[in-house]
Amino acid sequence: MSEGMGSMNKCRYISMLERWFDGESVEEDIRGHVEACSSCAAHLKQLQALRDAAQGVPRDEIASAQFLAFMAGIREGVTAPEPVRRPVWRLGWMAAAVLVLTFSLFWTVSGGPDAYEATVVESCSSDLEGATVSAYASDDGVMTVAVMVSVDEDSWGDDR
Amino acid sequence: MQMAVVYDIALVSRYADIRYPEADDSPVERWVLLAQQGDFAAFEKLVQFHRNDVFRLAFHYVRNREEAWDVSQEVFIKAFRALASFRREANFKTWLLRITANLCKDHAKKRRLLTVSFDSRRQADAAAVTPGPGQALEAQELGQAIQKALDCLSHKHKTAFMLREFEGCSYEEMAQIMNCSVGTVMSRLHHARKKLQESLQEMGVRRDGLDE
Image 1: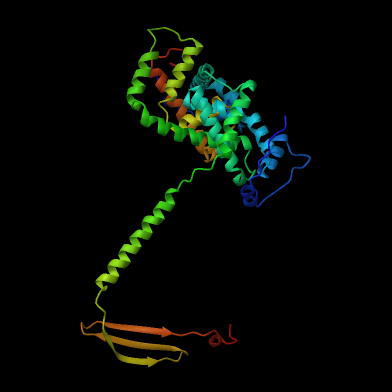
Image 2: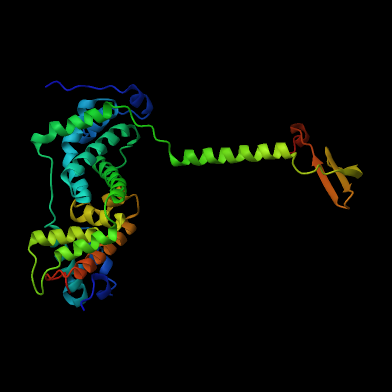
């Protein structure tokens, strides 16, 4: 069984060989390498055979005489109103908006979670101007400490 | 004949980066600039100049003259509408070929829904071109075999092969058209060739260099 193009060539020059074959610039003397390397020579032969085969693919063109007819269709197309197409991302945003609205409505109707009641058990101020520390305790025995800092622009003074 | 000039005010006002043609601009660059400013006659020149670049590629994808004609017209209509977004960083031809490749991909998707499944078509095609033992294919038959082998490739691999072998694009141009790096172009091209070779072997194509 014959081997395919990629499977038979393990030479490290394969990539450079293909670049050279496609008319791209290469850093080394690839022609000299191909003369010395039988696997690259075989690979080059395959590349050329494939290129030759591709030349047999039927081609077609628009002749000059057909240009006016071709252009007439384009003119008609560009003057026609552009079809309005909603992009997919816009549909995504719409779906997200509907979800948020549904969730908000559900939240409003159900009244949301029970209000969490807690009482301040201790509150004090600190040396830092505008900072207050408060400790809250709920009936469940959960203790929450909140540090509130109110900063007005003047409080930074000239130190900064 | 007097060319009709269509002034699309919306198009012009959308285009923030207006530059007027200069003496050292190539004719294509000049036509692009004028077309971007709403000169339909300049756009018509661009169509005339590039019609076969677009049509040839479309024809290789769809392999039907009428469909290639329609797709090519659609490419130019789309290009006209998107002219404002063309920033002239890429070559205009490259930009057109990119639109062509994308439209042909959409076209193939639509057509796949209307035709027989891929596998059954591939089997039928392979059976149709399998030559007898030792029989050499003539160039035309070989070309048909290549076309059928191209059907077995993904859109990306097929595009890489067609841009290189049929359109003669450089790696850099291919990278712009396929919106990828040059390294990715090389990888796609290598795999496209490898798979084509394998498909041709599966079809039993015998030709010096192809069946080794």
